[in-house]
Image 1 (cartoon, one colour):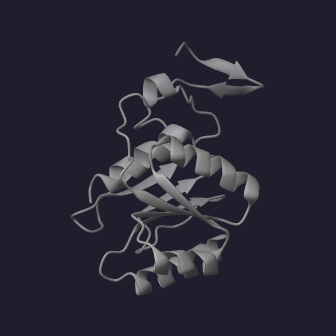
Image 2 (cartoon, one colour):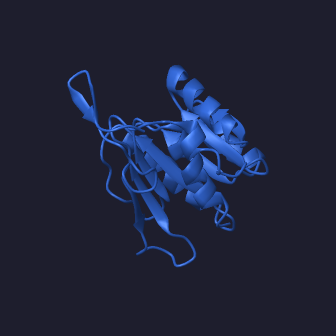
Amino acid sequence: MNDVQPISGIVQTPVNPLRGCGLNFNTSTTPSLQRLRLHSPTFCSDDSDEYGADLPSLAPFTVLLVDDRRLSQSMTQTMLALTGLRVVVAQGCSEALETLVNRPVDLVVLDLPDNNCLQLVSEIRERCPTRPPFIFIMSEDHMDPEPDVDVVMVKPVLQWQLHATASHLLTKW
């Protein structure tokens, strides 16, 4: 990356993928897992050669993507598939719960309105008490930490951020 570059009146600064884009560890949660809180800046370089080359494939893991909007669902599904994850898609809460009954998943990615997300998280935790999946929410706005949510990402979310977060969670299993 070069020096600071103006983009349409906004300044893009060079970033470190693990610090500059708001990757903050919350170690006050369970000792076996450091929970992440990601805040994506409006402009952050997505140079996959620099940031994604050393991230491991997540091929043995399955993720359930729950998104009620087709376009964002398609984009997120593609980004998750690029990590090597097996992606199962649900359109809403009832379809997500039905999927969880029929197949085990390692990670649940939620892109729903906040109230729906929190209700679904509660139901997932009730239905999967012995081996609950990791849960992270992609939110339009800042969201306070929830005890049952492993990660909160404020959109826009870049592919390398999604990969790094999924890798961090799933390799801790």
